[in-house]
Image (cartoon, rainbow, N blue to C red):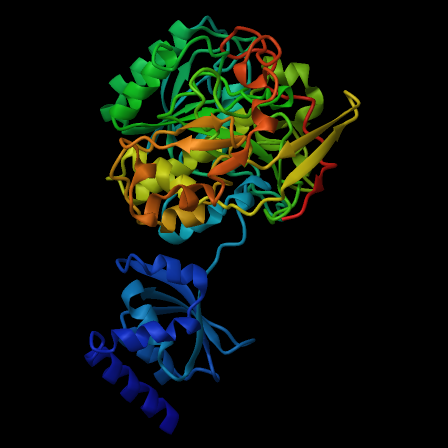
Length: 556
């Protein structure tokens, strides 16, 4: 009983002199988990934590938590601990008390979009209370089929709040590509949320609203004019549906400088209008460097390359896909992609009767994938490509904007790049038995950009972009045989403060050996690099030919 009275006296003493003891409380952060400490940089609001005590907590001990403004949700008997909802400002006060052994974040351990969500730490969004609610994402693609996973939580209305087609179409999604992308963006996993589910197939922002703007036909092809109409319409509808993000999982060969490319100009205008534009890098990486497609060559876009999760939840073994397009961009030589995200063998929504589902029946996912006893019609489909990686980043942007609606597109892009995971091997090798070839990838700025998107770190960041976060151009120093970033004083990366230094954003990869990238004609585009001339053609979707997970890792 004496110890309990001491607990209460200590508690009141700390509460009375919290400001004076701030330095002392900082010293107690060793009793707070690292991921929880990240959340405490913004002291507003509550947080769900697990509090471990030095001994079994009594009623008076738990009462002390209430005096700090917290509530005890569950008290455990297996270990001396309790699940607590607590004001963020009170966490270090609680941790500093002698009877408290450790305070950690109440981490979420389920509801993953297969392996994709785990790779980018998407579950952390729940700790911030963000799921895309209220954010509109314009999906410029092949359409979005009706699907239970795209309904609201009550199942009474679709979260596809606007539909419009700029191509001739029979189904809501004749091709099947847009529906798959939509599931990665905003599927809520309803169909796979069954008893004993092995895989709850939810998207990254599972309550976001979608604006369906169709520009690709049943063959997955379209035109610049259709894409321009869709981009224009997205900005027109911006205020009506709170469109803050545009997803473009499409591309075509670069024909001129970005300053003259109509798609790039439209992307720049959308960015200026306050909308984050996220674009696939393309799937021509096996052809070498300089293979990023337009409009992914726009310096104002967030251009996304594709990683493979190796069918494991930890991201530490993930590798770049051999097909992910590489920079620098043709003509303008911008450093692209900006970031990478999971885009190989991704399971998402099926559009029944679509071209892709008919062409690749082996990619249709049977219900026993997520539930061993489930039968019936299939609702999910597996695809690979940078088009699958792009919506991961678009949804991450939506979560960031929901958490802080004042974020500019530049701040969103800069935070995603700076906080990206940067631990990679020096190279990896992929053998494809269908071609009989081995593909080797170096982990340089033109392959993985600023790194692997980390949603937890991006949501925890409070850095603000004070200049444009335009992707920088690079130059070749022929004398030194090195490739260097060309520092433009109008962009963020030349800010004197270390916050946005090239080292902070690209992880020390500001200088590269030049021969591998600049050798030959690969960086200059041409027929050896580009595929067809359609906006989205045969090289765009790796339906039945995924990147083979037989890679080896180089030295760190």
